[in-house]
Image (cartoon, rainbow, N blue to C red; front, side, top):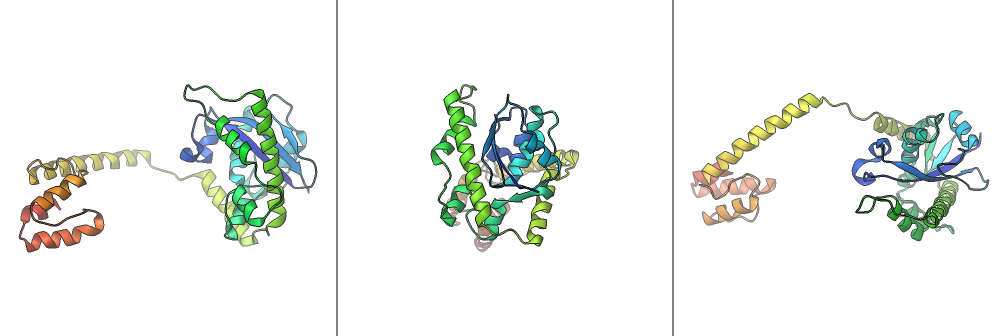
Length: 277
């Protein structure tokens, strides 16, 4: 079966770096701006919302055909959570059918970014840096909440997406595949990420309540012991100054420093300082 390379350009009101790919893809504000794709050594083709979605891409994913690209986790979550908003019969992409060139770069201790690995490999076709700057401009809302971008910008973004696919194809041709064991590990990692971690939220909230109570008690003790000089346990700068005022030389109350401070307080027989520490 042939190999599919595809790449999406998207925008969202949530910050991908802060939320992670899965949360980003599930957010209702996340949209696809365009997609570029290529089968084997064929031409690079395009799709954008409002156009009929390429049936050969749908069929390939449905049949569990190989899908290759850089940071394939992103393409999977966009296909699974955002594409169905545009294509009702969109298939689910699964990690077992994916090959990630970023993982292959990591395996060889090469830079993980598409730009970095392309430079490291000396590829003739390189990532479009001007297009990358445009992408960053279009993928986030402006300060007033509206979106940047003209029709010309979107056309330029599509060309940037095309070039990403071209570079990804060259990286795929140049890097050796992961070993079977490493590929299996990558798939497992993706499954873990897709599943997430189960949390007992009720217990988490109760634990936070306990922490809050303990913090208030510790603050009260700190205020009493220091006679009001330090009102909260988080006021480390004031605590440092208070200790120095008692003749205990102190530059920091970081975790690794407290043993020496306690020893100094003991030497000076300063029970009050020992209590504060």
